[in-house]
Length: 194
Image (cartoon, rainbow, N blue to C red; front, side):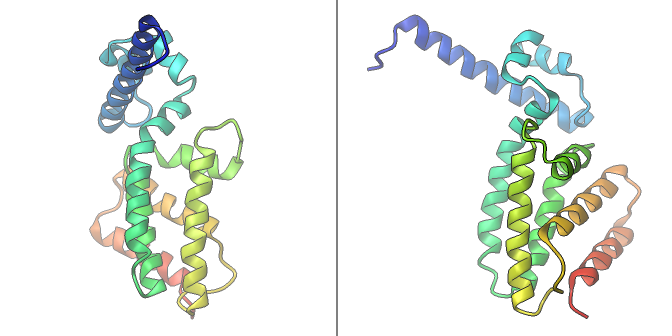
């Protein structure tokens, strides 16, 4: 039994329920309208006021980071699978595709992720997740480099930006299947040793 009074327990469950409702509504709106979706519409669909939304998520980036948390967990699970791939070059290639899929989750997502990775502002809630993705990319890259499957002189940061760029191009709708395959080949031949 909790030592908190019933009123405090009820308040806590309301706070958690509101947060979950906001995240569900935001995920739905980001899928339908991209990351520029109306925050007022998200609050309305969640059944809360704008003030409640902003208490939980003071910025659009904070809300986006909250929504991306579930996708980050999926990406972490995917990374664990990729880590079992015996060939480091193949593992790097699979990781790059996994990043591309992650960055393509919502229309407009690549821009704030690229900004967070570039600016490294500690107050931006997207900075830490981007730093983790860059570090994981660097691990895959270093393994591929050690096996002679990727050229030296590159860093995970470069490949992070490459994956974000492909996701951005996909989001513009300007790439058909052949163009997308060509862009991936250009990036892969850029990091493979000559």
